[in-house]
Each structure stands twice: as C-alpha cells, then as structure tokens.
Amino acid sequence: QVQLVESGGGVVQPGRSLRLSCVVSGFTLSSSGMHWVRQAPGKGLEWLTVISYDGSKKYYTDSVKGRFTISRDISKNTLYLQMDSLRADDTAVYYCAKGQSWSAFNWGQGTLVTVSS
Amino acid sequence: QSALTQPPSASGSPGQSVTISCTGTSSDVGGYSYVSWYQQHPGKAPQIMIYEVTKRPSGVPDRFSGSKSGNTASLTVSGLQAEDEADYYCSSYAGSNVVVFGGGTKLTVL
Image (cartoon, rainbow over all chains, first blue to last red; front, side, top):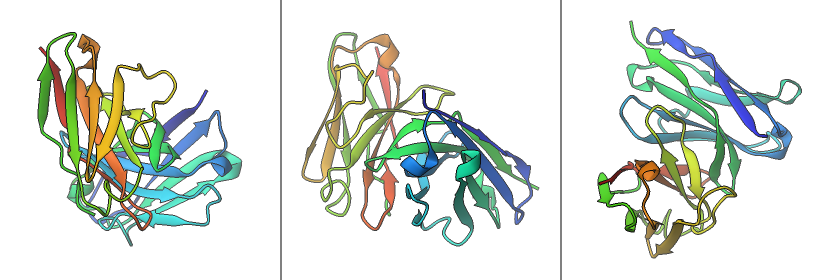
C-alpha cells in the first residue's frame, strides 16, 4: 500500500529557510518521479517541482526557481524540499505526491508552512 | 505557466450529471494528452480521479469520466451523489517539464 507522510512544517520568519521531508512506503523512490504541490489557505493547488525517477532531472515552477530545491535519499525512502529565502506568500500546506504520466497519483496528508514575523 | 481556467462553481441534484470545464491553450491542454482531475474534500488531501484525459485509476467509480476537445478538457460526473460534493481541480502537462493546475471548481450537490 502506497503511503506518503510529510513533516517539517511550522512557523518561520521571512527570509529564513525550512526543509520539508516526505517519507514514502509501499514503493521505492527509484521507481517513480515525485512532485511537490502546495495550497495556500483558501486557495487552489499550485505545482512546484518534480524530480525524475532516477534523480537526474529536477524541474521547478518559476515562482520557486532558485529558492527551492527538491532532492531525495533512496536509502531513507525520503523526498525533501529545501526552501530558502521564504516569503509570506509561501505560506501554504505542502504536499508530496507520487508521479505517473505527469499526474500526482498518490498524495501525502500535507504539512503546513507559515511564513510570518 | 498561466493557470488553467475553471468555473468557480457547479451544481446538480442527486442523480443528475454535471460537467466541469478546464480551458487552457495549445501549449498545455491542447498540446498534450496529460490532463488530470483531482477531487478534494474540505481539510483533506486531493485524490486523483482521472489521468491522461480519460483514464480512471482503480477504485474511482465509473460515474467519473474525462474528455478533451481542442484546448478544453472536461470532467463529467454522472449519477451525482452527496459524497461527490467537493472541490475539483484539473491539471495539465505544459511542456518544458512543468505542470499547471486550474483554479478549482466547487461542486455542490443540491
């Protein structure tokens, strides 16, 4: 059974950094591309980034390019999202998702990041 | 990387059918067969309902169907049930290895 569990969210000051984790089970990270998607309070879904099944390719939406970095540790079954230079408009619930055919097939429960002074 | 356009709301009575549209451009919806639809109940994570325009993952009722014509994709929910009341989002591959979502549609079962 595929499961994804995010953690690492919390309250952080503008300009600071935060790293989110997503522990997966029921499949291996080396077999699937993985996405991060976020949802600001009361707003819609926003796709952020994807890492290829072999970890060699990483792509980002323009709004986070240069500030966010996706990575993974196969040995720990863990996907990461390093978020630097955080801004108030980065406040959102962040979801990791297992990819398939440019879809987010399985989702975690999400972790809330609040950027506030 | 502009968001896809969805109507803010849609509604129907139990047993009826409702269709939600998702309009993009030839650079996303119209250019690829990678349109997906997601259902999200309040306070919950999204769940995939349709992928590759028309395909249903296992476990998704066949009351849910997807289609595409030109730059517009559609999700049809037939035989509406109370539990179908939720927010629905479309997404599409937009070339250059990025994905774009629609703004979401709130479906109300009257």
